[in-house]
Amino acid sequence: MFLLLDNSDIDLACREFVVTPLLVHYTPGEQYARQRRALGLRPLETDEEILSSRISSPSDIRSSKLMDSGLSGMLTGGALRGIQCESGMHYFIPIFMPAI
Image 1 (cartoon, rainbow, N blue to C red):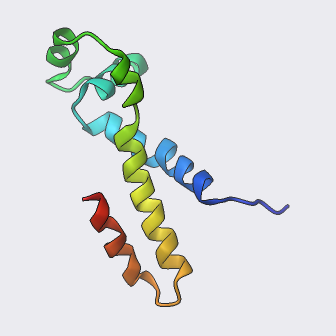
Image 2: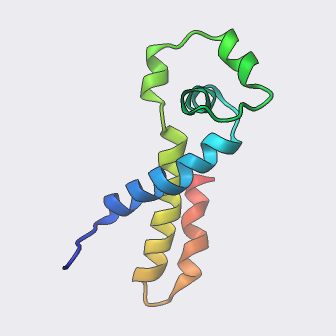
């Protein structure tokens, strides 16, 4: 069976299965603290302070998974650019520069 994947599918898979779980486990921040609490994961030291000090706003919904999408786009864009170019993987590192 032939499976056709485009760049957005690869980026989505990278975000959902690699980047987001790593950020949820190791990154402090309100959105990740809420996800840790919802999933029943061990909280970080700063989670209680973050969650008790701020009320959620509509802008939280708009910025949800913003960092996740940026990091996964950087990873998949760099990898795909390196794979697709004739010159090889020396394109992988320069792709990261606009994201930094």
